Image (cartoon, helix red, strand yellow):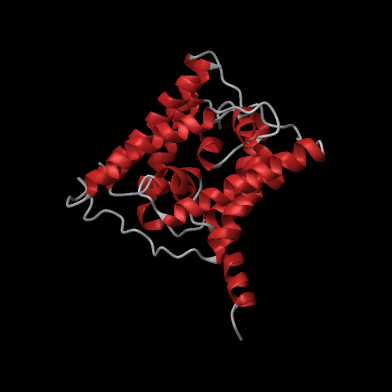
Length: 141
Length: 143
């Protein structure tokens, strides 16, 4: 649908503005996995307040906005094994690679970082192959 | 003050993820699924986000951040084993569920029990990674 593309562009612009604000004011890269990971593995203990504040906004504002818009859906699979395996893979993978879609994708590609570009090629490639395998060949998702 | 800016950052980030449809797993998996009914939305989100970020990076040249001593220095341009293996594992999980770390948090209030279980598994994976990385380094180090 055409409106989906427009909402994608507007929403993407907000994500980019968020990253630009965090970079220009706080001097930090807005990478979701790094910000969360540093809190749970203890490596980000020295700036925990900044991390916690970002996560608070990231959780609370979509919650309020979804309420205002009359609800939102994630349409997540109901297959528990898939959910748990996917969560573990995303957790280990993003921390091992030091970044996810926001850090390597948005913040890395925009500074033409080779690491960001290579990471993005690999996670999109692996994601595409996984969807094809588990949806069209195995019929699990 | 830094925490307040971080809160604003998270707020804009979360609002952007919701509005763009990136907390809807069908749109993410629809973009990855080149053999299905391909959904181009994610490319527009990426493009929309990269443009302001690229301008921001240009703006950092010769300047200092408002509330910090320095801008982050670019990491060594080294493509290591962990970057490739990690990104591949991440991509597999991303494809399976259609969620990555940002949207997993942004959708916490409306993602139901499944979303919560995904988040807990993701956090468990993150906690396990430092130990795992140490073991991999030891196992693959030249004797």
